Each structure stands twice: as structure tokens, then as C-alpha cells.
Length: 320
Image: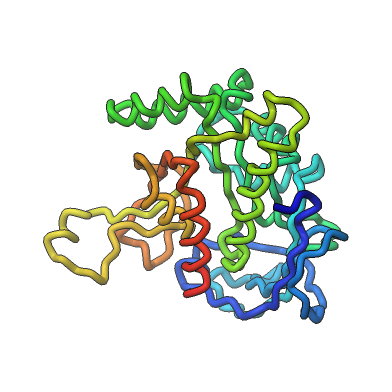
């Protein structure tokens, strides 16, 4: 398996179609327009960071429209980078509601992510002077960072949410305590209208880095810290308010759960256990979700399920 540098991937661009749901949920994105480059060679190069050219639907800066009337497409060269200190504000913005509206040491959490450069990826527009962060993926060992305030608070948040489910709470306590040496917190956040074709590459980058770190880190303790057996994942879904009524009607056209991120549906299918809880975050719901409520989703997924995840994610994106 090749080692770093390993970021450079070039793909032919293709049009991205956004559903009304995705359009309604998408963050407002402001970025410069980039001149399209001819991309013919998809072969990885060791000379630079990974760039992937995709059109990204953008609402024009200064536009008074709030209903997505603008259907323009901006051609952008996305690139994968190791996290760095300059990404602090961009990453913090992506993680603003990671623990719902909980008051916690988010700045300290972002610092941990940015300091771990061997495992972790941020996606930005190449040569963008603003260096806006459009996506983040990383995995943090819960034992390695157990004494940091942000991790202590995150564990308390998780346990508080699942405390009413004793069976799940007991399993979560094991992962956060006795088994924490081999548990990774998988953090993946992005703007909603990021081209979905980037996702397989983003997760491939993450899990390849985890694998490399088990061999390449300078000390035994660091190498062992990436030998994950489980991942804990926080996601977000929309749940039908009256799921019981849906079952009675047997209406296949009505989904009981709408996943904000398509990969979370795969994680949910592969997980050992999961737990949902109501979110307090107030966000305007699109018309399509008027009968749904926003929910947090906590999942535990065994690390040996990740090859299956990567395969299913690739198939899902290729079919869409």
C-alpha cells in the first residue's frame, strides 16, 4: 500500500443534481469562481495534494433569494489536505452543532483535530485565498485524549443521551472506559451540497491513513492508538413524527427515516447498536420534511465492517 504523499486524485467532472431536500438544507456557500481545467489523467501523483474538479451549486453572494431560485453552477477544483492551524475557524464552523446546542470545549476539540495531522483530511477549494473548509474527516482515539476537557464533556453528553436505554448505556460505558484504547471517534462533517462523488475518496483517505498510522507512527503507543476495534459515530437524521401511523398505512412512499448524509444509512445498517435522541438545534425544515423531526443518531460500528462500508458507499454513489 502506498504511503504519503497520497492526496492527489484527479477525476473528470460531471454534473451534480441536488434534491429539493438537499437544496433546502445546504449551507450558504460563498467562494470564488474557478476557471475549469482540462482533467484527463486520473492517475495519482506524488507531487501535490489531491484535487478533484466538481461543479458546486452556489447561491450568489448578495442574492436576496432564499428559496434556491438561482440554479448556477460554479466549477471548483477541490483538494484534500492535511489539517493545519489555519483551518481552525473553518473546522469550528463545520462542527458548530456537533453536540447539538451543548456548551462544551469546541475550540479544544478543534485543536485536537488539527494537531493530529497523520490521520485526518480537510477538503478545500484549491488556491482559494479564503481557505474555506468544505469537509472534514478524522478519527480520534478516545483513550489517548481521555483527559482533555472536550473529550470528557463529549463522553458525558453521549452517556446522558443513552442513559434511559440501560443495555446500550452499558455497552457505551465499556467503549468509553475499559475498551477505549481501541475506540475511535469518527468525525465527518461537511457542507450539505458538497458533491457526493467526493465521499468515497474522502473515506478512503481516512481509512488508508488509519491503516498506515498503525505501521508508520514513530512510537509503539501511537501505532497502537490507531488499531481501532470500534468506531463511535454521531450523525443526524429526520424521523417521521408518527412512525406508528406510517406502519399502519404501510405506505412505502413514506420513509420512516431520512438520512442527512447518505453514508450514515450504511453505518446504521452495519452498526452493533444505535440510539436516537431529539435535537434541540433549531433549523428551518424544508417543506418535504414538515412531518419529520430532527434527531441525533449515535452509532457503534466495528472496525472490521469498514471494508464493507467502503464498498457499499462506492456502489451507492456510483448508482446515484
